[in-house]
Amino acid sequence: MSEGAGGPMSKSSRFVDGSIYKTLLESTKAIPWKIDWATSTFAYIGPQIEDLLGWTPESWETVQDWASRMHPDDQKWVVDFCVAQSKAGVDHEADYRAMTKDGKYIWIRDVVHVVRDDAGNVLSLIGFMFDISERKRTEEQLLKLQRELEDLSYRDGLTNVANRRHFDSQFEIEWKSARRNKVPLSLALIDIDFFKQYNDTYGHVRGDECLKRVAATLVGRVSRPRDMVARFGGEEFALLLPETDAPGALHIATACLESISGEKITHDRSEAAPVVTISVGVGTVVPSSDDDPTRFLDEVDQCLYRAKQSGRNRLIARK
Image (cartoon, rainbow, N blue to C red; front, top):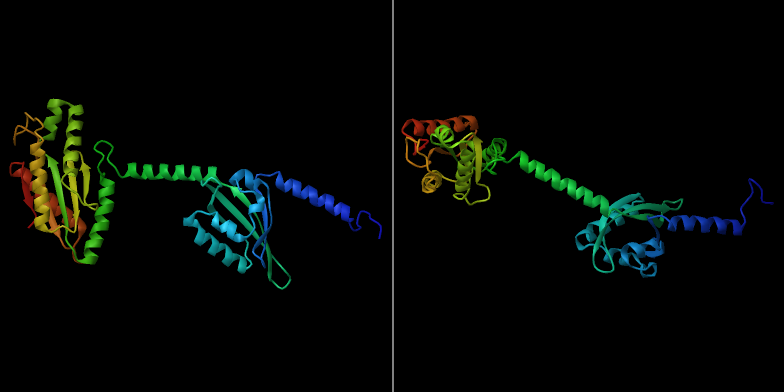
């Protein structure tokens, strides 16, 4: 049959077309490869692999070479995933860190097409490797920024302790945990005595410094990871003390009371002492299904109110 518009291609034509196709593949940044399924050997891998990872194409002989040049934390799950998908005849892709010849790591995305015969048996895997390092760096920067923004949304900008939003969220979590595990939950509410007069006398800049010193002192009196110091509002602070019984809460609250006085922040307009002091309401509960967190919070707040009405610079505990 003569070669025409619809006739078969000659071997030379097929060779030329194949050469062009190969040239096109090897001119891209994507790295083409082919693995023979029966022997688990590389039938081909593009020369770009050497520019990216430093390994020559000839060094990629078997799938073991591919697996061994993968970050240890990625190796098992990537290999298991790709083998399972390939056996099932499912095209897939995987992101992992590939090791360069000098021991560094580059993020790679492998996009895999599974070639099967008419009976559905896997013959080979054909795919492309893409360098996604820049994309991963961007993603990591965005995640870091997101975490920073989330942290800022839960932190008081002046004192750097938790804000009211964070307190409300954590209080709900700890209440449910204490109720579920039948353990005590303690809370202390703290108010700086005569703080309005302090601001009026010394100005708001000194007032802000006072708030920061009080917050830092309170933070210094709690030590466990789940303990929380929060700015409750204005000159009010809260201590959330999970798994702390009543004597333990009283001990911490008393230490806070004494520590703030011990800072000796001058306050000439205070009617309680010549230095900045605090009033504290403290309470402990082992929550049951009959208890209400809002009522408990109100009861501790009433203790704080009574401490202030009784002359300030003191602590009153919930009965």
